[in-house]
Image 1 (cartoon, one colour):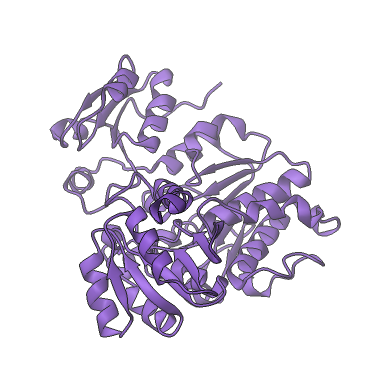
Image 2: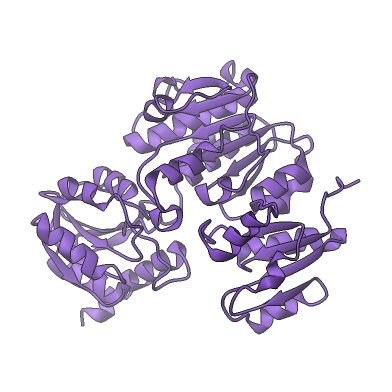
Length: 427
């Protein structure tokens, strides 16, 4: 029997992937669902909502607050007027992962957060556990909302990628194994301050108990006092032959995945899986993805690099001088840290998106050369014409994609499409 839910009326703010998942999970359980979307809904979305939920579009009205619970989509900032009014009226606000956790009541939950590396680490944990025959359920911010999988985890390890957006609205969410990979300025456009961003990340530790495990880097360990048993991420020893040729950031992801898997299943230490069975998870689409080589110039797609910390890691992993495609919707913090890594390493930055003027000022102040481009095809063509033998053309924008694209994946796909059209463009 499904666990009874302590509410009858739920307002869902936003009908993207998460909103649809919440509607699909609650409506069949007899919950009265109301969806509020700030943009116009498409005919397909209205058809999806028919017979499942009432809805409004083009803004949020008083109807949102006629609820026992509010579930905001991850992109809705906590300072938005509708959420602030819900707080004032003491209406509970849960993220989708809090809702999924309460529905699922998992025995083993491994949750992974961090500024960068979450998806790779989650995929690695899934690969290690699958190789050990444990049949994990992998979901969350990785692409499949947790609520979709809540009914599958009664006797299986549940491995979730969780973002700061999702964590900030949790109350009881308790991972038996929490992994916090790293921390760097990001999402300040959403959280407002670095302290608020850190506090949201810290929610992954808030409900853990002494029998749980928290895997943390040293820079986080010095700032928090978890109740759980702590493991220093940088002290983790990998099985013999694992990850010997990896760059530092991927080696850290592999360390975290190994430690988390062993915390969930201690017998793994006695008989580690064969490394080749899990290494495929290190190759994520649009994350330092080799696209190809054109007339001696390699092209690398790191569209998933959506903050300065990720772009610094990409620059460290790519050999030779770089022509860097940079820009998009910036997040109001951390970009000054790029300058020391760009000087002398980057032959030219090609700027795209709505942050062009911001980066032009920043790069000029740091004496880093740059040019402007109108779209991915224009940026890639300019980059190729500037690159010299031994250079790499790297898309690692350090910014969100939402100014020009549906998401980082579409940005990367258009970059790759532009690469394969280079022969035509050069005619």
